[in-house]
Length: 396
Figure 1 (cartoon, rainbow, N blue to C red):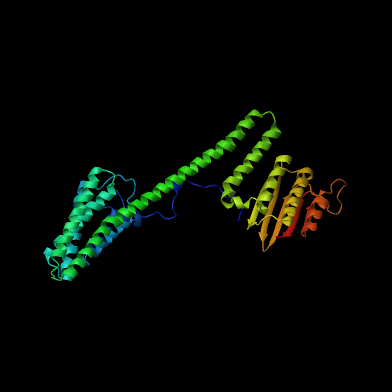
Figure 2 (cartoon, rainbow, N blue to C red):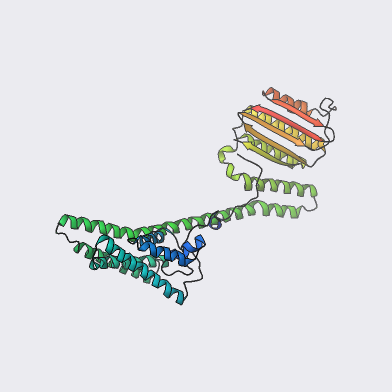
């Protein structure tokens, strides 16, 4: 469907402004991963309230710590920021972190009955994950970060071995099953965040490539059309009619590219709307009449009947250019419920449809006759001094 062009607002893919801002972890004021600071910025609340809520949730058998880890895993950190928190606020924030971790450990001991010795390997797993995930945020393309990731992975595997050895069962099958399950969980904890970050990076690269391709396409089109037309206009500046013709043709080409290119595919070159727009362009170029066609509905393949309607509309435009005494004409076409309707309007001198002067029978012969022979109808309304409307209808 093609409608009246709206202002062109296309932006490079990498610079699209979303209707609602996406949540990202914050670099400003972050202590660990920027989750609390990002939530505070996104919700426009104090970061202290967010951290206090996470601490309270951590007392519920570590739910706050688990939620923090999930958000950390599946959200990206913002690309730019002024830096981390100040030294004084970082000391206070780290105190809140230790309080949350300690509260989570205490609540787990109370709710599960685990001894402190059992929680130590779990704590080592947490330290290993912390090392690896922080390295992910800094990037995996540097040697030190790769070393940190490897160290964190070794710590995690060692802690998993300790957990299995302290399982408290002599059943070899259960120990093997526990080892496999815990190892898979550890691999997932290491791999899923990396996969998420790689997926985000791939999406950013695709967006950048799309933006670069769009810029290259715009540059090539400007070079092939606008710049060459401007050069021709400079060469023919002493011929106003030729300059006006070049400008109108370039305006039409740009208008079709900017507003209609997404609606047209190679398969639509032989369609009703395309033929009508081509006819309008021909009249523009030959008679210096400015025409802005508006098309509504689903385009259809061109047939003998609809071709006759298009040619009749073209002849009506030629009559406007020759006799109406105006510089512009309006063309509206729609295909609705299996019927093509084309309206050609001008605000020119008008005429009496019942008293057409000799030599001005284009409407009767080229419009009425052509359309009626194809099985369509023509209705002409004209008022002297106010203009003319030619309405053409044809089954599709």
